[in-house]
Image 1: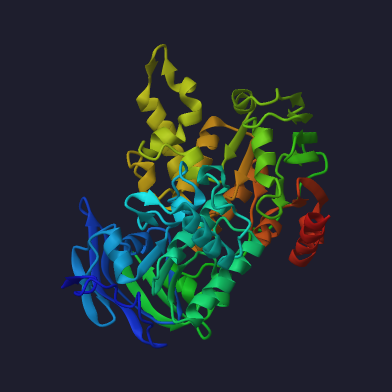
Image 2: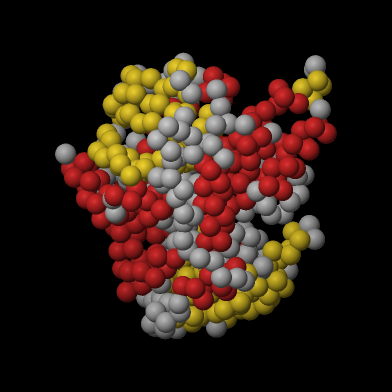
Length: 519
């Protein structure tokens, strides 16, 4: 076995592969952590010039396999072959030298460095330790322009970019290497529709040049548009390999991923009585430079969706209602009582809960146990003087864990070890323990597989049926329309439309968004 190419040259990095040639062949990969088997015999082959889609529920082993290919984890058993030659990938540098570059789902951008420095991190353009800054910026601008984002300044500090901007920088970094296989893990998760189109254009350019793309996404409609073949993982094993996208029905893919049939439908709307209590009133709300004159009411039992592109102001509206941002105009009332501006504690005391877009960095204590994350907003309830009653805390958390069918139902397991869908359930369980009446959900199914999505949709509807007022933000227009009773369309910080969800379709939402953004 060799580490990369025995001559020290990345195989394929300097010479193209013939279309259809098998670049990567993985056989019988096994990987365990502390007695838990994450991969239990995974097989995969990826050909030059194809988009090979990797599907599976959260916890199926996709992320572990990607980290094996990226040189982050070393497998316990099995082989990896690159262009017919067995290779070892002991480090990320070895993987890059072999010709494999990875765009990780967890943003790996270094906030304190510039965009250009991030792009060439690990293969800096320097002479005698001195960065060739002019060349660095020129090369960075070239790569960003190829991505369709030449407007991002190479000298800008990466920490000032949005989540979507950081994803673009992470993708550009992979392009800065002369890779023959690019692994993309949920690359569209934080991108708006126009940015997704740019991504697809780039993928087609890469595959036309003979580069292979291993594409991981929970969005089956994306797989249909961009993929050539599909490999499905379940419980750490390959259950289907190399299925042709064009001839494999979606219900079959869902059955392979979940082991059961999952209806891709939203729970039925139950209707909201006209005399239902108004739990949330937003009147003329504004945040200078971000959004203005936002008004809405949400009644008990109602789900209201905010539709719009990334950067339209949707998330900022939720954060301002919650008090995480201090409004510069307007007012927010909960059950008839006005909330002070910019006060999260007051909002929480009045029964408002927020599950943020970036749940890992903004919502969860990843190294703390599940039960502690569930009770995080309710510590005072379990205090007995200066002492925390951990028994009562755990019992309360366990009730919600059982109610939401958290898997695995282990209250002591660190939150970071759970799948995206189960981490989202923790966020919702936190506010159930707290007893909140107004629930704000920002991208509730981002990074969540198709089976867990159905569970979260049903959960949101059950919360509304129990009398909660729910506001949902999602980049997926179909999700907003299918889950909501009423929809507000937001563009460039303004509400362009408000009305019943059944009276507007996806095409009309897109028309409004484009018109509003161009105005």
